[in-house]
Amino acid sequence: MNTEALVEVVLPGKVEPEDLQLRHGVVPAAGPGQVLVRMEATGVSFAEQQMRRGRYYDQPAFPFVPGYDLVGTVLAVGEGVGPDLVGTRVAALLKVGGWASHVLVEAADAVPVPDGIGAAEAETLVVNGVTAWQMLHRRARVRAGQTVLVHGANGGVGSVLVQLARAAGANVIGTASARHHGALRDKGVVPVDRRDEDIAARVRELAPGGVDAVFDHVGGRSVVDSWHLLAPGGTLVSYGTAATRDGEGSKQWPVLKLLGRVWLWNALPNRRRAFFYNVWAGRALARNRFRARLRGDLTQVFGALRRGDVTAQIAAQLPLARAAEALRLAESGTVAGKVVLNP
Image 1 (tube, rainbow, N blue to C red):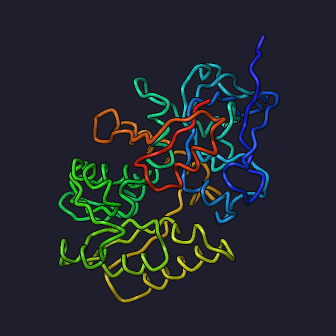
Image 2: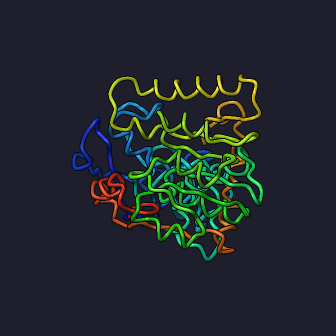
């Protein structure tokens, strides 16, 4: 007899982390095409920081269960799903719903985690790893010997991105607070102080001819500077609007403004390119292709972890019941890597 109970964290509205709600219920049954996953690790990403402020551009209506991704073990399968999946550790990209002890996932969206990789390790590389891999290899197509600039090089995505870039043979400049510079140097990254230095001037000193790619999650004025730091033939990949996290007004406007800039820059008669990266791009129009690409790229990232090209940077691990503390820690900007929640 199954005596497990559902526990989930609910975001009731635009609240402080301490006002997150813990809800108990009945474990759901897997429907056709679904698997029931017992969560082993989920994470705190920048998306949740925006969502609690009502600033994530396409978040659902309150209340909802946040949680952009998860890693867990398949407990049961629904109709049409092979029973051999039961007992398999899988990873899934969700956007919302991961901060729960048990989660229903479409079987086609569940990616097996290779043996020898722990749940928390794998969790640090789901949304962060896929994002970093696709920006580096599918958008910027960085090659050995090129020089790239990574903003937020100590963060969840940035810490994976700098390692993948180094594994690809690129020279990496990374912005971060001074406290993280030693760790970045150990990874072969040239650090630039994001608080005390004129970042653009310092990057020009390090790369007088410009950089071959910039990965910018900040938005605002930063993305304009990033564009002007590109060498001929360089690529800008913008993937966020962190500068507007605490802003007011429309949550769509910062993204629309970014899209407008990208369109304008690409229309100019120059050899540089700009992209606004969204991990969900193409899912609505070509779901099977999206799933195949996600599965292939995440498998590549897990392979990089097993080879030692990437290390899992776990900033902290806290139980689901302490989600408020985990969110505060992630928002503090004092940690490197990803804050992970366990059941």
